[in-house]
Length: 377
Length: 174
Image 1 (cartoon, chains in turn blue, yellow):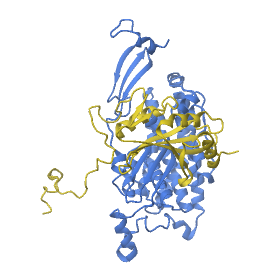
Image 2 (cartoon, helix red, strand yellow; image 1 turned 45 degrees about the horizontal axis):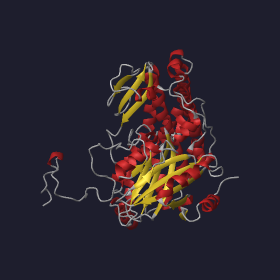
Image 3 (cartoon, rainbow over the protein chains, first blue to last red; image 1 turned 120 degrees about the vertical axis):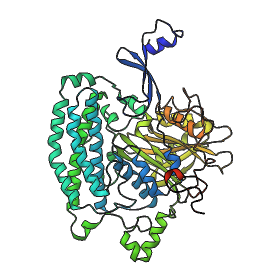
Image 4 (cartoon, rainbow over the protein chains, first blue to last red; image 1 turned 90 degrees about the vertical axis):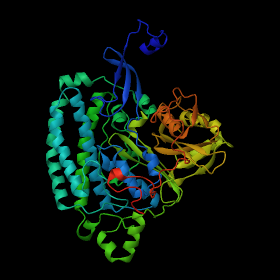
């Protein structure tokens, strides 16, 4: 009989109770977010927990029902602020699927570069913060300067760093400048050595291994039943990756491997994330090579040719009639979208991030549902 | 041999000739619906069948159509067959006056929180759910905020006093 079952049979306040009830949160440095846990702990092992989430619920799905498509992008930023470009682009791709826009190859590769940088930034935080929680601060500080470099690249591309609101429906707001490519090259040159050193600090570190191995392990079938996706599912040994299973944005042109773990415990998740950062680096290198192959006029393509949905250049707005009309219609939210329902998903930093958009042919979504990888399990 | 939408459709029609209806394929994803009393049977069949193997619940959500009398609320299940990599969408509709739908937590554990959330925002009563309480909103709330009868604030309203934000009072424009 498990401890929990044993307890259910005991009267209230019984001294036979073998566990301790512990309140963790709503704010606690180890939860990295605002939610409350009422834990039943048996020594150091958590046997039961009751969570209260929703302290920072922001009703995005409701707000989105009133906004034109381009105004929903800033909402998606806030869903996972460690890798907001993935969310932004996932949303843009959902809209493009509904509106029937085909993207130029160069934009796809540029998007892959940005999305993989976001994945690295996300995994880097996750893995280094595990270090902080288990008592190793050094790794965290050490990789943080490379997250800074990633943010500088985004800053060159879109002007902001954390909640990026990067790109638009149909592409990017401007072409990548030289500085962003120089910074990207610097990152690609320097980061592999940093990642190596980061792994040296952790992977075979006895203290780290003892504190993470066998903690939170889960079997593959149970993980699937609970709706796990992303690195946590892969650590349990299922090679499900949205980039492979439903390729979007030209991921099928590039070569990469999907790392899998075995036991699904914290240590395996750590290893999977580390290896994914390697694969992301390789993806960025390949995509960057493909971007460099575009010469002359092709190297200036940074958005699809869809004037109805893509916000025109400011200069054109002042000088051209059509551009002025489209600008007005887009900004005032007067563009109608075709009726239909579409589900599109991307591989976010922590799992399958899906957008289920129902349009009734109006100016705003009739219903927008986000499949949030973390809420589900 | 990969599983196609056509095969899934035939297999379903074989098993539920009358009940499963409304086959569509928007953007390549097979969509169909069934009466709400049968949602468990259909999902269990989709889960257990050796050909179909829809054993992964991607997401679950509800939609409110106020103008459809008697079937105002729709529950949408997104399922994924990870072996053959096929996605499908399954819908059941229910009356808003009596929004009872059977829970699917016995088949997919992932549905636990998703059903709580759907209950929280649309008021769908998932019969048999182990812990059907509000999840994101406060428990004292007595309405279901995602229903269409609660519109968002009119962005052009002028009666609001936003002196606090340095934009003058409510009669700033008059």
